[in-house]
Image (cartoon, rainbow, N blue to C red; front, side):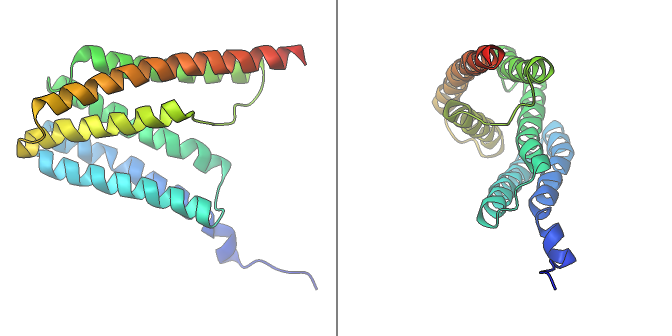
Length: 192
């Protein structure tokens, strides 16, 4: 008689995906709270979203509950939250338009490159670079600082200038890094 896995064990791998979907569902209330000027509550929900991101990542790695869907959902949830918040803060004139254009432009370049690679070469295995992870962290820090300044009058304006500048620099560098890295991979795959 062979080893049988219980149905509960088969579905445990979906727990990180469920947490990720809940994070996606937080985007709408966060945007509404920002539009309504309830910055403190929006910040609380952003912290909950950040905690859930860490939790689903921990569970996926600790218990090897990794799925292809989770590999796509997790970065998509992060991007959806950051882009929605950046656009909302820009519409409220709290974030410069040019910075939001750079952040979203980088994402468009990356997604376009991934689609082109998939169509011309083969499936893309999501593999964020170190600079991309730093960029995502800085984007999150920047929006948290912007919202916290509105909610509590802190941090000072210089912190926004420094984090905004860091977001600009890492967005540009990581966008170029993705283009160069995936171009090299495409050329190498074509030679095979």
